[in-house]
Image (cartoon, rainbow, N blue to C red; front, side):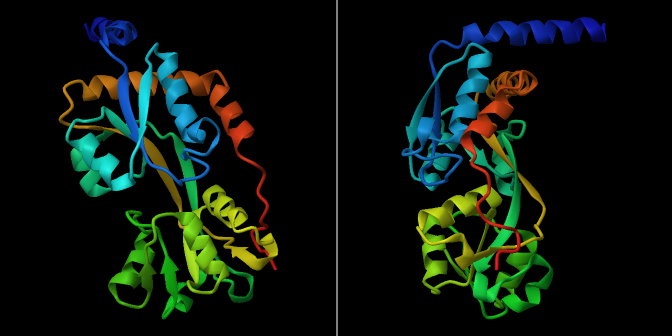
Length: 256
């Protein structure tokens, strides 16, 4: 009986792509290179991944660009079917269903070469100025320092501004995935030798497509999307997208 139920479920999912009466309504935010951005090829790496995963299931979607907070709230109230890419968080998980990971990110500390900071030496952060974009959730050890008042946070709209302020010595460090951080540093036009990327990491974080829990077909949409993403990965197309989009790192983990 269990086998028949599973077979019926899979058949239903296989046929459900055609049942969506209209294109899915997606929304994302700008200036999150290389993952999303209006000026990036194809809207960014994860924009391409999301569309390709949906296409694997015969689904198409329109994409709107909104400020991050606005897009999130408008998705929650039903103006959009889904938004991306978001990391898990307690409040978000209470309100949204999460897809399988679109991308697994490693969080590094970025600082100036003359004041290199490592993850293993967080005591050195006392009195420092952290640049961390508005709405981003810091790793737990960093949040503890902020809560204790040992570290000051500055929250601009995007990571590129953090890289610029780091270069100008107005802020002392920022935290980002390796590829995100290096992309932001390249945008400053300064040589890589001016900066330092920590050898250690805070651990992995995952980026997801999310659908409101109150969406009438939210669970079905997540199931469809996950099947499409799995097919994309199994065929090798996901890896080819990554290799074509992401440039080799320009920063040594221990830049002088």
